[in-house]
Length: 297
Image 1 (tube, one colour):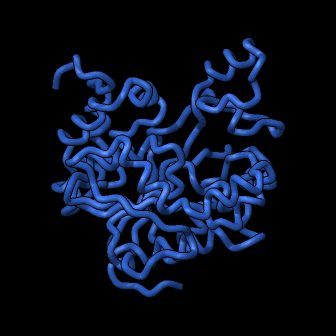
Image 2 (cartoon, rainbow, N blue to C red):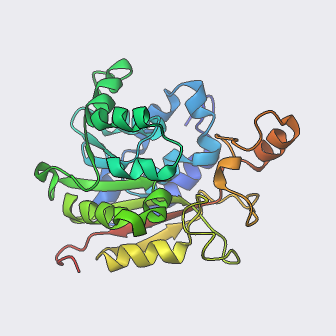
């Protein structure tokens, strides 16, 4: 592999190989390392600049994501992973975006009525917006809202990805059962043996439980594992590929102080520099599997 490829290093290659060796069965043969490297190398500079923090090659390999499969991406946001996935899954693949339920948005407290109303048409807007960047060899895109998944997805999905998407579902769970609904949709959508991949801001063991409830962006690993296994999923394993030991928040801190948001340092260059030096958050990377033959609890 040429070291001249932007964003792909020998370290990436070695870790990616280790991740592939970790997985088992047919999915190993299906994972296309060369295709993934090519897709990542072709991304814009702003996307490739985040590879050192987000490790997309290693992460997608750990989750056994393969071309030609169907993937649900929870809360795709501005589409950082979306564009990578769409190109990697290819013309025989399908990428499905899943947004939060509309009635969850007013609970954040900072969305205006107009912004909430604008999300009523998010399913169509998300697909239509892809036309600005989607290539002829990209996966077919569709979308839905958690709690209202179309029947056509039942048992049709290979992988569900919750990448930095669980904290808000957990934060508002008591208000509307949003996390429960998302896990039920994931269960119904997945084929037997299908994979759930989680990347989530990780609360350290010494942080208070009430701080790590999602409102500050962080969740406890034990909480995530308990919720997924209670929903019927098997815990397959964890990886430290998205750890950042420099991220050591106090109880007054929230994850959005860090890149890329840097929300608490606008107008304060010194704090901005300090937060940028920490880098993106300390993140758990967990893999779950829907059993081959088991009913939901």
